[in-house]
Length: 92
Figure (spheres, rainbow, N blue to C red):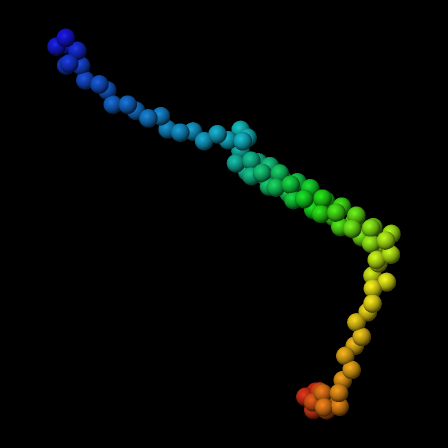
């Protein structure tokens, strides 16, 4: 039993953590692939948004709610005082 006490425990050596890589290629190619994936995701999101807007526009046109049917804003009529101020400011 005394012999067992004399044996010292060796300190535990922690193994360095190895980061898992998505691709086992050069870093340049890896970055290019990641950028491509980001671009593809953005393209898909834009396509979904464009499809949604197209459906809304189609419903408006078929429902008679197109831009041509919307009442236009009447231009504000300028009062004589506003006209005088504009002319003096512009120096005509």
